[in-house]
Amino acid sequence: MSLFQQIKARLRVLFPRRYAWPAVDILLSGGQHLHLVGSIHMGTRDMSPLPSGLLKQLSRADALVVEADISGHDSPFADLAIPPPLNERLTESQLAELERVAQEVGLSLAMLDTQPLWQIAMVLQATQAQRLGLRGDYGIDFQLLTLAKSRQLPVIELEGAESQVALLRQLPEDGLLLLDDTLTHWHTNARLLQTMISWWLDAPPSDTQLALPSTFSESLYDVLMHERNQAWRTRLQALPAGRYVVAVGALHLYGEGNLPSLLK
Image: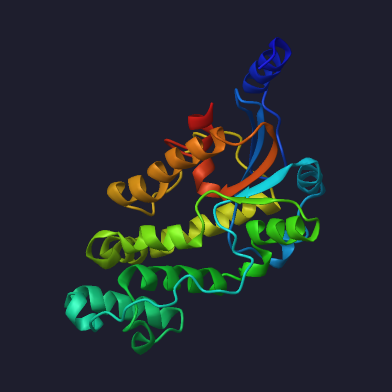
């Protein structure tokens, strides 16, 4: 990195640029200019089209970096083994709470009975988002992917959908802790979704150390947030010099061990 680039990078740390969407600019020592965007995987109609400033960032980029390319139609949940019935995997109280929440969002236990516990948690979270008016087509990463491909801009995956599913499949007890956390923090998660939507429709927080309500237990947070942030840091540092728009889940930009702080 030249002396000019070092001075420029130091000034960006001291006087970071503010955007109307959740984003942080970072210049790495290898000459990688990163525009880190706090994505929401499902969005509202008002979140499309994307802000003109973000579109300008994308037009200047050498590639779009995402957690996984979700623009295809193949399901990452195909070919999963059918587990035992829910009454053999959950206690009576856990089953009762699952039934209560499932009824709240219009899902039947019969539909969930043949799914792994981690997948049930994912289905519940996605259904909750839909009930709040969110749709996958308006998700930030989906919109960015659609634009990138229409412009033939290279797309780089930090993980890929198969790796994400493999991570979930490795959770202890078939992902029981993820399901427990989903049920325990059900209403907190809904409020957090609405907060993240406001970051895109109104204004994002200025402090990346912002304390957000927890929807994961500490051990699960380490696996789903901290460890992935550390792996992504290594992946981003290995990119060739150039300009990149990097879209990751908004929660990865804030709180303890967030991705921007690791890269800085």
